[in-house]
Picture 1 (cartoon, helix red, strand yellow):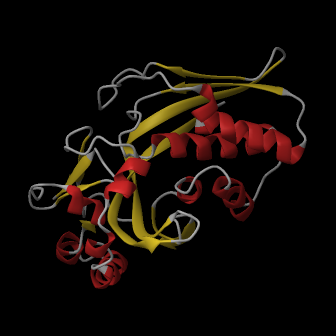
Picture 2 (cartoon, helix red, strand yellow):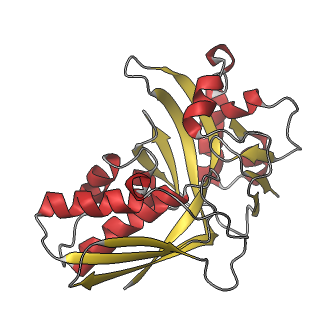
Length: 256
């Protein structure tokens, strides 16, 4: 079977503080981008489990960049292993990821792939898992993975894994253009968090509340006024108007 894994941007991202566990508590609004996607092939096989990353499919809207990644760090492989362990599945599975979302771009490709694998395996093995059960599994893989179980537009709280569905934004209302690898932030997410001055973060909670209202009412002007991201405190120069980091970067997106 084939299943699609879409990219995301963070319309806002508030970093509220660091917990004793070492994780950062956040509040964010995820928004799924339908024209940026990986295609994943999942099939039963008689040989052994296999997860591979192939080149992007034809007519990709972006340039596929370096695809090498350690299998032990591949979230799709973690999703497969967790699924088989949880449901005591002995069959072997082949997963091929046709990569269009650049790796380490801040667009959530790895998390989206993992969520797609969970949904695909539920279908292949006829388990018909509920959204709630899939999200429980997704939390064990990564903090962004639960969002991709439901997609659309949603509020993410705690470490980002507690998801509250919001009305999806009509593409005709808000057009988003993504520029992968276009900001000066090149660090991995953990490095970006470590570089933050937390005294400069968490100042825009009122803007997040206004953004939620704007999304619910379809108020484009109010949406544009309240986009923000605390990782932008790491930038030496502000980004152009209506342009923001997606997650911890390096991708940026522009709204019109």
